[in-house]
Amino acid sequence: MKTNISLAKKWIESAIADLKRFLKSLKSNDFADVAFRSQFAVEKLNKSILVLLGIKT
Image 1 (spheres, one colour):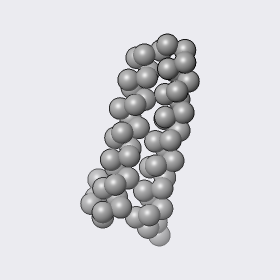
Image 2 (cartoon, helix red, strand yellow):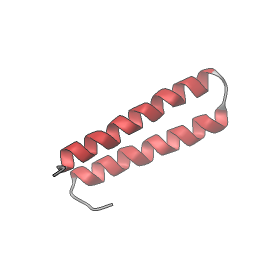
Image 3 (cartoon, one colour):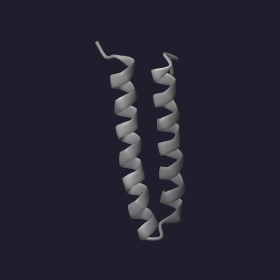
Image 4 (spheres, one colour):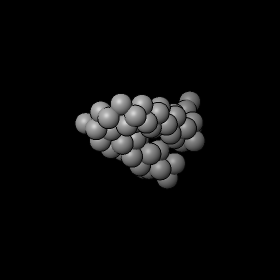
């Protein structure tokens, strides 16, 4: 059974992966992907917070 902490950790790891892609896109001036990746990372971090608080998403 997965705990809230382990689920939140997975969301945070996924957000970090998006931020790494964000940095690569920024270096290559792919600003459309920069916007997409930054938004996606923020949504995942928000979801991790909700999961930690025990709020079903």
